[in-house]
Length: 195
Image (cartoon, rainbow, N blue to C red):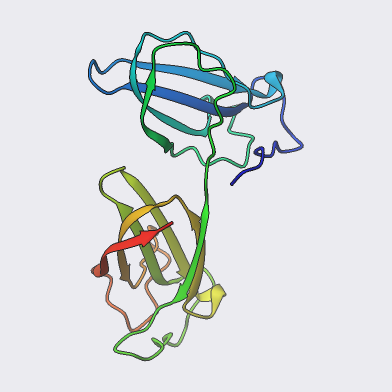
């Protein structure tokens, strides 16, 4: 959002920070640059073939049991350029990763859903899913009894989203959906533009 990403305090040399992926649109080759905590900054550099590229950025998880993404970038990559023509050196190219805050409340037939009796803190009450089918973005927000209400918020990437809502049954045999909403997802918006 126009500023450098943040690095967490517990970042050591082998933890990941970010990745930049350049995907050539006609020939299909992909070039990646991976940044680690040892790099200490978010500057990247790649040697490219001439072409027209989609450019994607995101947090980087080295996929090791000991090392994780240590930046505030999500590991789901975001497309920051849809078609950038690169035939010469492109020095100082800024990849502006954007998060858009979204928030709202869930209603059932125009009124606030109810939470059933015997609701344990980890029982579910609702889920909200934002799906951007063209760019393959997928964001989910889960609400639990401990939240005590049907208000939700998240930060998502710019795009045009389908928005789905349902009651939430956590993936555990000990916890259940404790709202009067069914768990079958209902599409609320078919093309909600988030910019």
